[in-house]
Amino acid sequence: MKYFILAGEASGDKQAALLCKSLRSLDRDAVMEGWGGEQMILQGVNVTVHYSKLAFMGFVEIIKHLPAILRNFKLCKKEILAFNPDALILVDYPGFNLRMATWAHKQNIPVYYYISPQLWAWHTSRVFIVKKAVRRMYVILPFEKEFYKNYGVDALYIGHPLAQEIQHETKEVHFPVKNQVALLPGSRKHEVELILPVMVALAAIEKKYSFKVVAVKHLPEKIYRDIIGSQENVELASGDMHATLYESEAAIVTSGTATLETALLGTPQIVVYKGNKISYQLAKRLIKVPFISLVNLIAGKQLVPELIQKDFTPQKMKDALDHVLANTSAIKQEYNALSDQLTSGGGPEAAAADIISDLHSIRKLQ
Image (cartoon, rainbow, N blue to C red):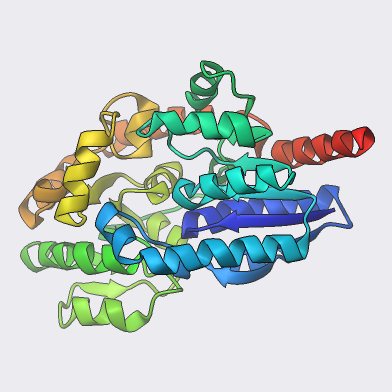
């Protein structure tokens, strides 16, 4: 069968790749095309547009890039019609993907949504788009199945793909380097430009630690090096993100999927975020959840510190870093409980099997 996959961010690319791997193992004749990144390409997907051209976040940023976003909608529809897929698989990225779901449904293309957008956090009304246009929603957080059930949406809890993947990695014993701290300033250019300078300012006042910056491959290395400058105790990580997190005693992580990934790897962390002031004030009035990090949301309490906007300062990061390093054992114990929750469910294999089964049932009705 033919599958068109839409992933608009680095985290979506990574998780879509796990699903594509499972689809290919169950459907030897699978032909895959879509928008995404390097991880999807490694799984044999013909990626025609890289997610780096799609990653606009925040109200101001979206308005600024509106002409490009509209061109992307037009191009995506054109490519889907030319490819003529048996299924459209959407991965998170709701601003773009929910609109594509509505359009694809009108074209009689079966739509499957892998990894729910955070409709439970804000814009809850968009659940009605899902109810009308999406055949199946695959959820990866324990509380999401009940959320969708309340709206009469067919959702399948599969556990978190990253949790299941990392479960195999963590069988090895890892020994962190004393006083090494990983810095994860985000996957978008504007995030790195806003967040990394504050992280580097922390390094300037906290000389006892060595800091390793985890860079993303799709951004030029020069962006990071220009911000780090001559700060001697800050360097760019030479290995991958997991290797850097394993070897670090703690991490300072920009809010997003990386916070959950850090927890599953067992590295104590501080969650930070800084965005455009106008976008932040608008989001603050709309978001309905008590925490910004997935770690704290799943735990149902503040397991790790969160420093947002005006609280994201070098001094407050220093204080939070001292706190998490003094409570490493307790944090890791909570991480283990979180991992147990997220490794239940059938993972991407269950979602792939369900998609293929549903597509076969559609064919029988035709």
